[in-house]
Length: 206
Image (cartoon, rainbow, N blue to C red; front, side, top):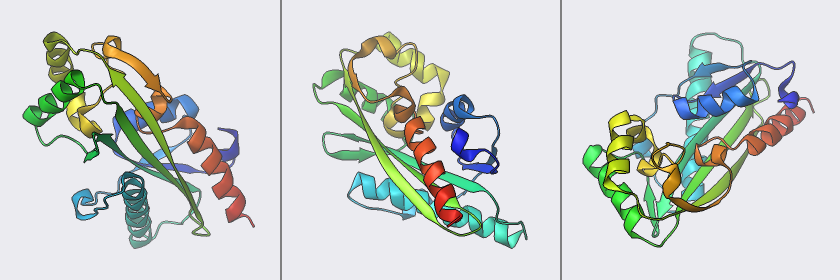
């Protein structure tokens, strides 16, 4: 991630999936968590919702840094993702039963599942922020019960928006068509991250 050279990068997320994607871009970053009540922020537009959440996470992390007397230096990346399906916004499943319901509905429908991912880059010293949203689309064929059982047993899907873990080996063969990149589906679109880091750094030095 050349645009970030010389700048400290903070990834503001608790998501192990986003960290895996970030590791493919750079290992020169630290991690902070916002620990906000995401359910307290609502919007009927999924793109607006994920961007509102990304801003709220940035506000929370900056507030923690200020309270601790830490210098506001470098770039902070905050993110959020929801899944949309048949006009419904889906976040992380409440429990295994809801996750199974989500997966069965994807299997039984000819409608696509969409991921809506927001990334917000904050230049900490200046407070300048730039953000963007990326949408990916997945079409599923039949998801056999054994594939459902396998992805549930592994457990990580319970932490995925919409109960969607498209990169799981049991689920990948069930995908009939995909529009968008795997990193976007995992919640951290790499091309968007690189662009926003460069823009935030440039704005911060104006």
